[in-house]
Image (cartoon, rainbow, N blue to C red):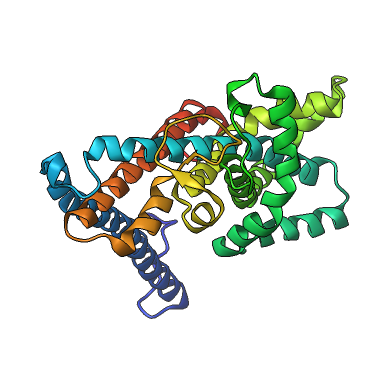
Length: 319
């Protein structure tokens, strides 16, 4: 033992504090490890359930399936799921990033607090409320716009075809989904933008950059991983949304890109909700198999997002 080594006797306050910290570290490590393992177990359990219940539908003859050949049955719904979510992200992402930039770099403090609270409150609105709003308010309001788009831009395939008389189209459902995912993306972007190093912003301004140039050169590059993560979280919500889409959309088992007609591709989640009460035997397995397809799509989206974020790890502390 060296001269400068100090050992507290057993029962001394210093020894008790170190023992308490060691116990706390062990408990926290065990809790954290157990939480991580629990997530993996739950994910594996869900995947096992989906695969196990889907096998009868995937291996049965098409003539024995209540909804016909599985892949022909699921293809329109898989397309509708991706199509509706893509349209929703097209509307939500620019608006969410703009709102986040406004709240973090332009709005006064009082306005920032009020708007931030309102945006966060949107995330607490139930899906069924958005669905009712989409049916009773948004769809009638959007129908004159649909008529105008069809009249003047009908030569574009997206706006071709007879306009829906109710306004319950894939475009209306996409707008509802965009409103639903907007608070998720905005909250993520806002938190990331506030973490931008102050020195980076001040250096850009000191070199003569305007505020927009500073945002483009310092804030957006730093926040890109967070923007991508927020977009993927919002996309996951849009892909899996059920009630709002089932209530707003006038569905059909078709594959088309028409935005204004009454013949709209349905989503997997909404189709399961609508068809499950009347399904039986292999019909139940077939619907669960479509849920497995949705699970794979969502998993692929999240893996892609993780890969994109990992490529920009120099700006992110998540890796």
